[in-house]
Length: 311
Image (cartoon, rainbow, N blue to C red):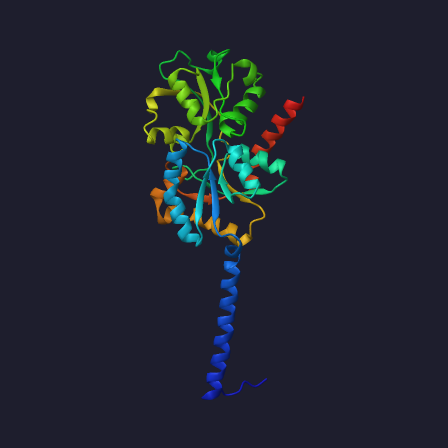
């Protein structure tokens, strides 16, 4: 087929047609990109307080403002006292994403048959993934190893905490020393309560979590908030590395919305490292994408715990 020699008016008409075509493609692309904003006028982000609820909301205000600007819709912070609170709000559609524990994610995923999925998690100060469940005592206590605590008050946090409940419950059962019978094991209600309970003498020891060198985690957060001096506590047991806390979202969110939420976190440290560290609650090299496979081991532990309770 011969291509006509387009000069003068013919060239102008061709340019007009091409321009109109490109404009149509652009408008369609922009419309597709804006589709989720037509339905989701704001995004709810659930977190549990690491300090107090007021302090947590204040800490997250900067991130909410940043995310609102990036996404083009308001981002609202939702807080609950326990992981199950924010996970239930997520399942009910009251919020759209939540930073939760791996155990709470796994439990919800099992209960609702995959209605939630992980998007991202924070790396530690060296860029690694994962953290440790740890058993802490006061530095001046006589307890040097967990065997010294037999029959003592050793607090777990709450049933949907991985480091404060699931990991120690499963790991000590494997050792033939079930937490419920080997220790007296009250439920503190949260990591902050556990640590403060140890410092105040309410508990002889408590399970909590940290990363290598206390880069981020409960211990780092309390140190940074002047709630704890590192020399006040001693770690006498730690688990192997377990999957890190994920930011999760409803699985039925539009794919382009989930992609934008993932990008929001992944690029955060490049644009504002201080804000990234505030969100991660400590030193981090940034957020990275994760998928369900990252939490296979946690899902298996939840199944083991459920089966052991049945038996």
